[in-house]
Image (cartoon, rainbow over all chains, first blue to last red; front, side, top):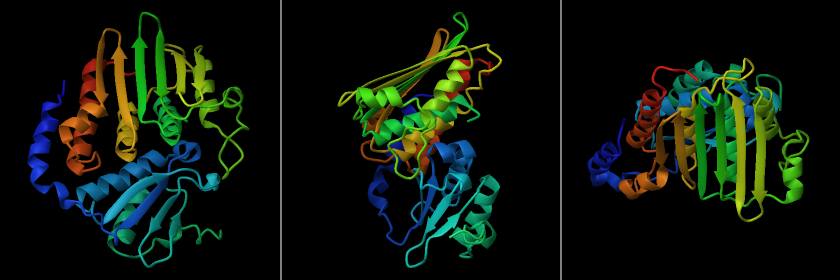
Length: 125
Length: 184
């Protein structure tokens, strides 16, 4: 069994840099809909993909992944909204883990919106 | 919903939205009784008796973004269609307890699924609530209590990568040992 002793070790390792997390106001926010509609449509793997990629690349202070409830467009779930300071909100619809990966690479890292997955590309307003 | 764990993620989400400071999630698998029991209990704002009576109705919700509320009805249906039972008890200002019992060997029982991810997601994305989770298979069990973890961490949040990975591994490894090769 894994014990809490390891957690103690993590704390000791990190104590030196406890206050390093200054929430960057320029951070990109990635918000995944996680109400019943989102979860049933497969939002969990999408949320996990974003969170894992951000951790893997060490970008937790630049990109904040979070979740929200239902925004009333249940038929387009899983929905991901990307908020970038100074830019218009981008809404991606019918997402899955592979699409999340692509959005991470091309949009969050590369700065180019992946038009084909956006709500505006599907002709919705 | 394709997994019991996704139902749990969804229903426990209601507890955090109810402002619960503590959410208790118990999974109890008994091969002798032939049951898989799930209890989700919170100390959130609770519901009026009128709301409790309506909450299993798919056309009732307090949301304003849509007119249906399927989370609780899905969970109830999943339990009952496996020959199990469903119960919800709530008191305004005290909290809510949801109990779902599934028939363990019933062909219509959906798999438990990735319960470790569910618990991990709840902990990491709801830092304002504490979670007590216990996973039991017959006489073997383990638990996770975020209040204990908070005390050890002394202010380091759960979403720091090192801590998040630790929590995930803690859940997966201890579940594997509790399951002893069996998949539920």
